[in-house]
Image (cartoon, rainbow, N blue to C red; front, side):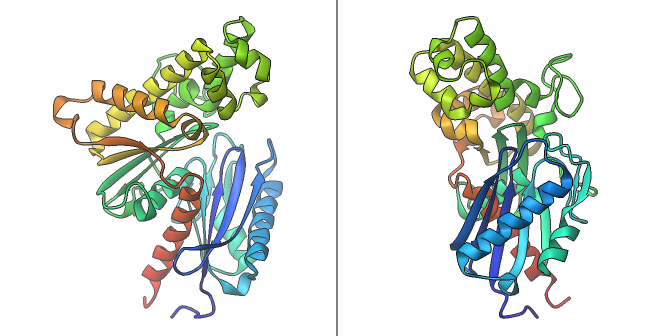
Amino acid sequence: MADAGRNQWIGFDLGGTKMLAKVFNGDFKPIGSQRKKTKAHQGVKAGLARIVETIRNALSDAGSDISQIAGIGIGCPGPVDMENGIVLDPPNLGWGEVSVREHLQREFDCPVVVVNDVDAGVYGEYCFGAARGTRTALGVFPGTGIGGGCVYDGAILRGRHCSCFEIGHVPVMPNGPLCGCGKRGCLEAVASRLAVAANAARSAYRGEAPALQKAAGTDLSEIRSSVLADSIKAGDASIENIVREAARQIGVAVAGVIHLMAPDIVILGGGLVEAMPELFVKGVQSAAKDRVMPAFRGTFKVVATELGDDAGVLGAAAWVKKNVKGMEGR
């Protein structure tokens, strides 16, 4: 039986540029939270310590302590061994293989599940947001990289040995740009925020994007999603074309998945989408519709995430609750 005193669930989203922890009560109402930046190039030890600190601060914000935690769900970028709670060499963290579950269980003495961050986001949308009532929900979240996730019949779709749906590493351009995974021509290498920012910086350098040049110059670290959106609003047509091409490439990759999975809904999330939702939703929808067989054209819709940043933390918390409750009485 579950400990009645342990009635709070923690969702954690470890993104490429930020980490977010939220404490939820049994009805999944948030009662505490903490957000921190993910420090660039931090090692495993420092990264895990920062995760623990963020969770403890969220508990403090909720007026709670570890004795009240029923479980922790954490969404991490890249492939994940969900069975054993291990992240498997995430391309944009540089961590190698790390047993996140073992570390957090030791620190907080409670059940811990580790899932891919976009899987967590799609599960959050399935339980609480845009994908409620669907059978198959696909998520594509372009950010520092491009994450993918899928919920099928109420469960996160995964392989036997690790998570799947790494749509960011689907090859879309033979002999294209080098990706963070070490391969060439991945979707992530041509349509992630980092790829878009690099193309935008070149455009600014050539004098084709005066608004962007004024706001951020050619510094990649300053060319954030909101800056790109502002540049387009200010009339930088070259930046709009770069973003539209990224959306088109994502749509082409999504079309391939539609032929394989026939999702009811395709959910777009991440910083780029949040900054320019209409542009991305229309661009991905149009490209996917143009590329699928006629029988599939009216079977899916493309939408922006309904829950925003909360999708990942809600999904991670709901997933650990589902798994902990599923083990009761065994």
